[in-house]
Amino acid sequence: MSGNVFTAVKVSEHVYWVGAIDWGIRDFHGYATRRGSTYNAYLIIADKITLVDTVRAPFKQEMLARISSLLDPRDISCIISNHAELDHSGCLPDIVGMIRPERVYASTVGARVLKEHFRFETDITAVKNGESISLGNMEVACLETRMLHWPDSMFSYLAEDHILFSQDAFGMHLASSERFDDEIDPAVLVCEAATYYANILLPYSPQVLKLLDQMPGLGLKIDLVAPDHGPVWRRGFDEIKDYYRRWALQKPQKKAVVVYATMWHSTDLMARALAEGLTRSGITVKVMPMEVHHRSDIAFELLDAGALVVGSPTLNNSVFPSMADVLTYLKGLRPQNLIGAAFGSYGWSGEAVKQLESYLSEMKIQLVGESIRAKHVPDADILDLCCDLGSKIGEELSKRIE
Ligand code: FEO
Image: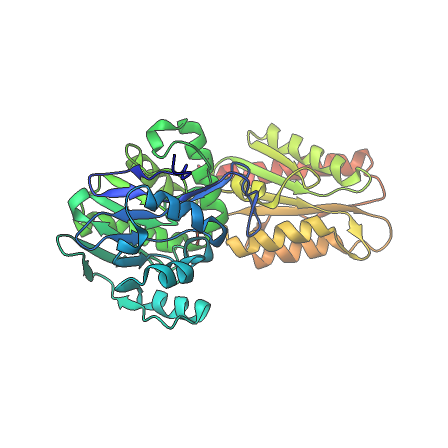
């Protein structure tokens, strides 16, 4: 018994998964990862044994143990860094120091970003878009995929095994004992891939569309897509590609998301009345009080919505903190093609609703109707107004979709 409990998992004829499973992570730079994650690294058994990406620093030993189940890590000749973010490069300096590879490859931007992060003394070999890396008996082709997810990002492709290493793209935060998509409940895959898209890739939807349009012309035969998070796509890649196109296009659906905070349930009453009006006009509504939802839940629901309706009480002349949080987050994700409205209760000054309007306008969300404010507690007239505003938003949304 060696004590090494971690093993590599064969992915294709020449490729093994040697990554790490993070069962416990629940926050990935602000995104709630309720099913954990994986940091995938892959080992290509070529003349020049090559490691594709590494793992987050605390998981270095797990990755090394999985590599050691196959070979001595010091036999690795090359490392290809497809993405410089620290969940894939965190242990790169230690690994480079330990195995002293002949070459570390990254995109032209990646070579600079890795140097900036780690002050490497080792040279990083920059590969240009479309260039190939020789592994002796095989070649790995490199394709820049800027902004998917960072400016440095690139894909690499091993023609021998028809496998595309896609770093963050087509990935998901999902810790699992299974390594392939066809071993996991498809509903979980779509849910986690959508959550990942909404929270990580949404701002880069134009680049996603460009990539999807470009892929057929590259003439790559792809049997496997190996991202840096979640399972390897062995069966369902075409389906997930279709989902990516849909998510990137952000065509509004007959769905509204009502997000609000409440102090003494006045704004809550208004949200419920708005939801009734939306429902009456045939719109699916998700009512999401920030007391019980995480900002990334809202991003997920907004992915296929056509309207964002936001509510807040005024607290100390300001919008409620949880609403400032979620709206700051959503603004950064740059959702497109939404209409919306603002509402809220107040006691004396009542600035919150104007501030909500400003957020919506910065997000280029077209306001429907007049915003509604209720002093202290909404009376029957105010609740009727909320219900009417909900119906108006629903009608406007239906018109846009028809
Ligand atoms: Fe999984 Fe952009 O890092």
